[in-house]
Amino acid sequence: MLQRPILLKMCPTDSCYVSGLDVLPLSDKGGISTNMHRSTGAGSGTSSGRARCQRHIMDDGTLRGVVCENFHIICRGRTMVKRLLIMISICFLCCFTIPSGGLLFAGEPAVVNSVGMTFVIIPAGSFMMGSPAGEPGRRDDEIRHRVTLTKDFCLQTTEVTNAQWKAVMGNNPSDFKNCGDDCPVQNVSWNDCQKFIRQLNEKEMTEGYRLPTEAEWEYACRAGTETALYNGPLEILGRRNAPVLTSVAWYGGNSCVDYSGGYICSGWNDREKSCSRCGPHPVGLKEPNSWGLYDMYGNVYEWCQDWYGKYPDAEATDPKGPVDGRIRVLRGGSWGSGASSCRSATRSGGTTDARFNGGGFRVVLDY
Image 1 (cartoon, rainbow, N blue to C red):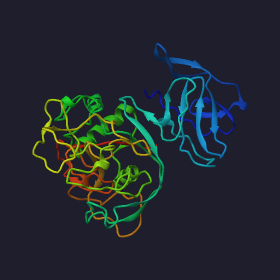
Image 2 (cartoon, one colour):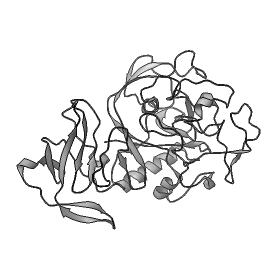
Image 3 (tube, helix red, strand yellow):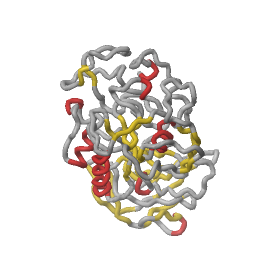
């Protein structure tokens, strides 16, 4: 559980102590008393004491993190070789209680908030957005172009679940309630997502939560890959039959369910697996990409912040889509989608008030 946000900056020496919102050299002064939430075996409470922090740097100069030993708090920074001016301003993001002696490394969760939403840091970088000619299922709106994202951001590792939605909004709008608390919330519009985000920001006392831009979504989904899927090329044997998707996605070819209220899908043809009812599944059961993101394909479509529009003809930096439009972007495909809709580059959209049983979302946390 995320504890009280604490700003931890770069430790300027090998050993530091926490003073208010700073990390100061231990040589300047002995550890000081400061009120912080400390996790104990019997629960959490407020305690004062000394918090001693130390940098962890690998032999190649890579910053791996800062551990504050007394309060079992880890603040993990982005792993970058010889990036000496990084502020582990992951403050607010990346300070949370863990078992004594633990340390977070690249690819592991960076923060878990008060409603159980887990985030990982997505590093800034450049990539080719869209799809190349000849990619199976390619559409005309996937013009390939280079995009550069200049800022790191944190992205939720899974889609927002029924339990997380209920914790913030107090209700469950999903059509598939019998799927369970760990299933992705669906039947939520883009407008509904904005309401959720506003209330989540208020609950967490921040302004950092938002939907991802379309470029952020595809960049995070690809995780450095250029193939149709983050686990390789896509071979389509039938509309809903692409075995390469089985390990990473719940899609129209394998989304069979045994809970009551599943969607009748016995009439679907060209399927990888036949059954009578289909629907979403609990999040995080398929293999993640190399950045620790689950269900980027299938399960539910994911709303993005952008208006849907034509891609720019040239390179773009931190694109946010058209200034206005008629529909908002949806990405990733759903439990009922054909194989071609579950690609890194596939684009879809819906009006801001559209609700459907295959539509959900995940959120970004800025820092």
